[in-house]
Image (cartoon, rainbow, N blue to C red):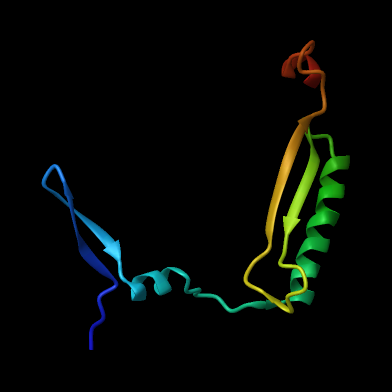
Length: 104
């Protein structure tokens, strides 16, 4: 048995067909191909990441990791993923010194 996940919308603009998701198609967009991980594994990933942030900050790179953010669903025993974002900050006065002068 085949189930439609996309159908032609009755709306047409400039003689172009548009498509919309059926309820089954909408459920398919929420599906995951991966298994959830235990919170202990997510915490380990975050701890290893934070350790690496500290190591990189001490290295002689042109930028340091200024801020970081991670997101994990609070209180959930199993997670689908861990979201991490970082912000970089130059180690030199960008207003008065060029990269070449900083590296010299």
